[in-house]
Length: 306
Image 1 (cartoon, rainbow, N blue to C red):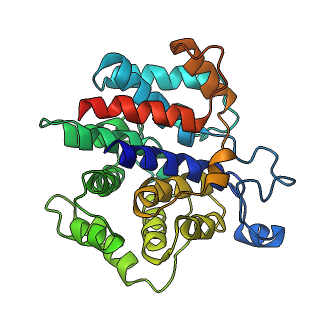
Image 2: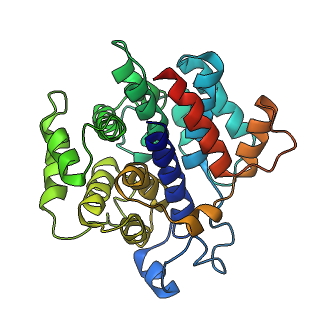
C-alpha cells in the first residue's frame, strides 16, 4: 500500500508541475509554442515551469497536519491554509482565500478539489464511519455546493479503490464506480461518458475551471492513454486550469501506469511558500527539499495508520 500511496502523491505533483507550463493559456497558444514532452518544454515562455503551486502544496500540508495531530482536524486545516496564504505563494487560486472564509454555495469550480488526493488516501487508510466522509468534509471548507461534494466523493472512491486494489485497470475502475451504491446518476453519467468516448475530451477555455467538464476530461484521458505521459500531455495541451486538471489525472494515473517518468520527477521544484512552511514545522531546516524526498517520507508515515 505504501507504494500505491507514493505513486498517487507523486503522480498528483507531477500533474501540477507539468501543467504549470500551460496554465491559463488558450489551446491555440499552447499549440503555437510547439511540442510538450518534458516539464520544462516551454521554459523560455514560462520560467516558473515545474515549480509547485497550491495544487501540490495544500495536499502536502493536509498530510502534515494529519500526521502532527494523528487525526483530521478541519479547524487546524483551515488555519494551516490561512498561514500558507500569508506566505504569499506565487500561484494561488484567486477565489481560494474568500471561499475559505465563506464556503461557496454557488459555482461548481474545480479548485475545490485541489486537496482531494490527501483526503482520498486517508479515507482508504482509516476505518470508522467518518473515514469515507473525509474528502467531502475537507472540500466543505471552501464549498457548500452539492455537485462539488458529489464530485469529491467520485474522486475519493476512485482513488481509494486503486489504493485498496479493488480495481487494477481503467476498465475495472470504471465498472467499480458504475456499480457504486453511493454515487449519484450524474457522476455515473460522467464515468459512462468517458468510457464511451472516442478520444480525450479537453474542456473548452470557457468551462475549464468547472467540475463536470474537468472530471470528464481526466476520466477520458485514463480511458485512452497508453502510458502515464500520454494523458498528461493531452490534458496540458488544453491550457486553462491545466495544473489541477493534470494533477487530478496524475493522482489516479500514477497507480495505473508504470513507470512514472524519472526525467519529469527530477524537474519538480518545491515552492518557496511550501519550503518555508515545512521548515517551520519540521527538522528539515537545513535540507534542500525535493518532492521525491517529501513524498517518500509521507507515504511511509501515512502507512502506519493502515
